[in-house]
Image 1 (cartoon, helix red, strand yellow):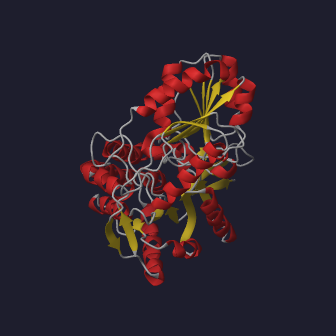
Image 2: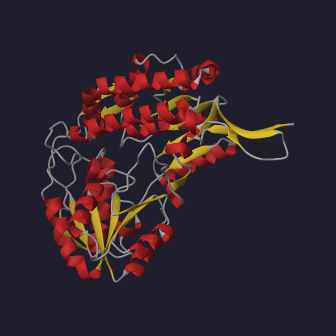
Image 3: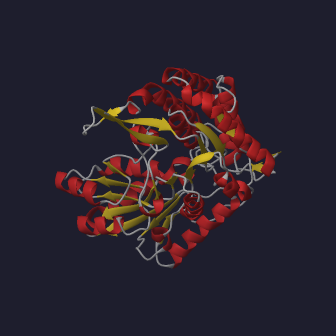
Length: 453
């Protein structure tokens, strides 16, 4: 059984029946059967289907936002925009897939030679709970438009969200089997990956889980895209617009109660403006409103699960015990549910827990750096490499940061975010492969070389 529990109250919402091994295999076979017809559909027909999905998403926006609030604690004020972004993703690939997948003519000794991009088959998406709609659609939209069929194994925390996504596709009129919801226990994931009908795997989650998925997929010689954890640095130099940097760093850190892989987790501030920046960050963090995610005024919802909150609190306590100053939060609140206060940790050094580990919650760790050289060095002093940001007006520093920051994406004087138009992914223990943009849609295709005399 898959149980959804309200993280704000800790109450059990509903128990959902999970598939057994045979039912799982039958569901995957349906997707394999559907591939033959779906892959032969013209791109214009696939695009019509995805446009219809986008319309259904918007029709169900309030319901979907409420489901996310109930199952994983996302405030409804964030849930609505997540649904809109998912619809945009579907529309974007419906509009641009034909150009992204067009035959690419290459010169050779042939009369004509080119590369054509063909779908692989059925792709298994293994998804986390923290952005139930968006993370599903950044997998589904490009894979489906490329002509693959998709099997979606969503997180056990959000079974109602997963079913609601499947209902959107059904109402949009997609052929049966093109998108299959796979409500299974985690113990069956390896068997799903190894199923002969699965051609490739897309995984979003922790580095530890990603390593297991990669090992299984590799043993089956199946391609995989992994978007894993992050401990993103945000460098703020003295010449930056400090107020804007404080606004964006705060927003980046607290979106989804800080439960985001690409959140700014390590704030590296030049020493000459360090105390001023701490004041600005404290002011912004202190006025954020925690509460019931169903309340439209709530800005910070609860942590999704009790065990995740326990890990976060352990990280905060360890960092404080190692000498960091706790300027805000840091204490477990009383009462039911898994709320965690917005927390500001100052004087965090590279040997402390909040610097070394990924923190998944509304905890901001701030470190003083002597200069740009130290900032670059500390930014790269991590096993992760997902996103990074720098705030400065110096073009020389910007050019060096873009070249030298070890990350899948770099934001200059702005926020690290995902966008359907741009590829997203990481290096090091943040994963490999890319999602979104023209690079993402080509991850799950066969780049077939054609040589004609």
